[in-house]
Length: 158
Image (tube, rainbow, N blue to C red):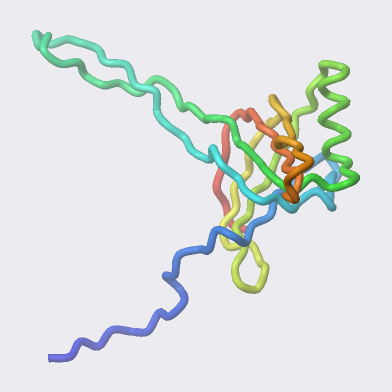
């Protein structure tokens, strides 16, 4: 017995994680057009903070009630470019201890380089910046890492 299943080739394939772009947005669009290449993004999640409340005569267990959403810091890593307007702004923020809030766009790209899935991280700012170890006996790339705190994120299509 054969089933007549319509072809949906390519439509339900999972997105590939190696094609993505990061954009730091300002009042006039993308503020750092050359600072969009990153090696990896991590810390992208949301969790519900829950507290347990007893009641209704049941003291053995608690009723889990949602309290608030928790967003861990977003961690971006890349090979350190020689010049970077983004890095200069980060260093200025640390020097002046004034943190400019930015919206950050993360897009996973399809095979033609177009956004397939996009998230907007709202009111983000860098809370930590670091370089990988520098070693005279190694020939690896210097890795720049930045950690961003943000208010929340929203998913949408472009």
